[in-house]
Every structure is written in structure tokens, then in C-alpha cells.
Amino acid sequence: MDAEGAAGAPDGAEAPGTPQRPVHVTLAEAVAATGGRLEGGAPDARLERLADPSDPDYARVAPGAVVVLPGGTALPSPWPALLVVTADAALDTAPDGALLRVDDARLALARLSRLFDRQPPLAEGVSPHAHVDPSARLGAGVSLAAGAVVGAGASLGPGCVVGAGAVVGAGVSLGPGCVVHPNATLYPGTRLGARVVVHAGAVIGADGFGYAAGPRGAEKIHHLGGVLLEDDVEVGANTAIDRGTLRDTVVGARTKIDNHCQVGHNVRIGPDTLIAGMCGIGGSSRIGRGVIVGGFVAISDHVTVGDGARIAGRSGVTKDVPAGATWAGFPARPHRAFARELYLLGRLEEMWQAVKPRRGGSDER
Image 1 (tube, rainbow, N blue to C red):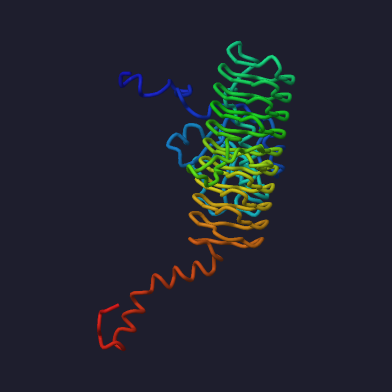
Image 2: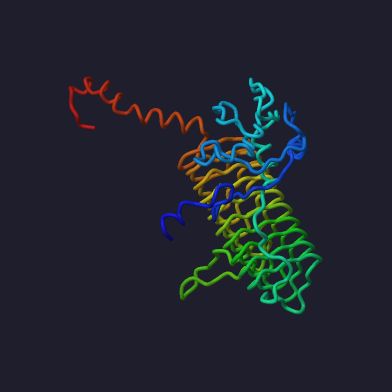
């Protein structure tokens, strides 16, 4: 492409590959989605996109933009079509824009993002290049992209979408409204509740890591359980959730697991839990309800993490964590103890210099 072609799209047009294209949402729809209190603006005014004021292109898109402003953030310039702030923000409505006051700015962002999400569909209808076993059952409105595979006896509820190259194995069950992104694999024995999302490259239901020492080396323990993902679970790209040995590995309703995580066999994760990327959970561990696990955390096998616990990023959990506790470090321990140890570690040189005169000035440590 020459320099002129690389300069971008003509004025008023979207550049190729722009992630967010204009979407026409009315101000009234934005208010209804967030439950906020509107100050200024016409209810039928059109909003085109969510915008980030730090984006170099912000000034161009500001006239049709919605900006969600967390507390303590500088005001955007120019003023957008709609500025969303917390209810107690000390701001007046701008002459050329509208102000929407909400109780929780981040929650408002989540609900507005749903209005403005116009990603192209993974599939529309059943592609003639999808491979569907004659014994599989497809509910009303199921869509399968080219190269999708649905095995013998599989059941897909109404409105399910399966992307290109994804495999829904024999006997797998999907509740209504599930989305399986391209190249994800659901092994036989996997069950999904309603509205479950499995992102690209994820593997659900592979054998767990189980072996017995035999006279000729490790002998495989065959895994006879499956995997159950309850309603509204979301599994990130390239995450693996292993099948149980004799009973199912279970992920509770509304739990969200980020990319590149490993969930071992027989693990049971409670509802409403958040697990950030690069985490590994050893087999037969129990993670409670409403737990938050930071990125790059390792949880040993046969460990219990209580309801509402918080595990800081890069921690290594080797023993049970009480409900409601916040732990950090390796090995993980209560956050207060971990923070004090870090503080003292940073003062070692200072403390040594204070002690050294008592040892006759020797530098021997």
C-alpha cells in the first residue's frame, strides 16, 4: 500500500480494521440500560460509540461519543455527547452535552458496552460446510459456522452458536444461548448450562493428569467423569478444564475464568468467582463462592479456598484459605503478614548496619 492509501479512510468514514464502528443508540436507551439520572440532552439524541479520551482519535469521534468517567479521572476535552459519572461527582452539565449520573460507573460501562457491541456474528444459520452427525439434536435458531463439528448424540439448545473449527463432541449437551468460539473443543462428557461462553482454543473435558506407579512406569488412570459448566459461565481463550476421575469437574454459575488457565480434574469452583489469566488449580481443590483469584496464581491440589476469599496475583496457595481472607505471596499467607515481611526485608541492610558495631565492626554476615 502506498503512503496515500495508508493515510486512512476519507473524512467521515471508518478506517479499515477499526474495532468499534458507529452504532446508533439513543440517549433514552442509554439511560434505560444504566438506570441513571440524566441531566441535559434530548432523549432521542443519537450516540455512536463508547470512547476513551486518551485515544488519539478521540477529538474526531467526541460529538457522538459516550465517555464513562471513574472517580478522580480528569474531565475529557472536548466534552462528549454523553458523560457518565458517579452520582456524587461535583460536575455541572456542559452546554453542548449531557451528563448521566449513576451509582456505579464500572457497572454502567458493562451495561453500555452491551448496547454498543456489534461484533460480526460467528455464524448465521447452519453452514453447508458444518459437519453434523445425523443423531445430533439442534434446537431452534442454532447457528454453525463452516468447519464446525457436532458429534453423535450431541444436543444444542435454542439459539446456540458454534464457530468455525469448533468441536462439540459426542453426547455433549449445550443449554440455550451458548456460544462456542472458533477452534474450541468440548470433549464427550461435557455439559453446558444456559448462556455459557467458551472462547477460542479452550479445551473442556480432556483427561486429567492421573497416573499410578506400575512395574513398567506410570499407568494411566482413565477418567470416567465429565465437566459441568453451569449457567452464564465464561471460559477464556486457550483455557483447559479437565474431566473428573469418577465424577464431574464443576464450575459454578456466573463464574468467569480468564485466558490460559488450567483447572485440574475433580475441581469444584463455586458460583460468582473470578479467576484471572495464567492461573493453575490443582486436582480435587475446592474454590468457594465469590472468590477472586489474581493473575498467575498457583493453587495446589486438594486445597480449599473459602467463600469470598481474595488471592493476590503471583501467589502460591499450598494450604486451605479461610473464607473472606486475603492472602498473598509464595507460599501464600495472610496479606498483612506478607506485607510486613516485605517491609522488613527492605530494611535488612539498615538493620545490619545498626547491629554491626556490636559485632566489632565485622562485615561477616
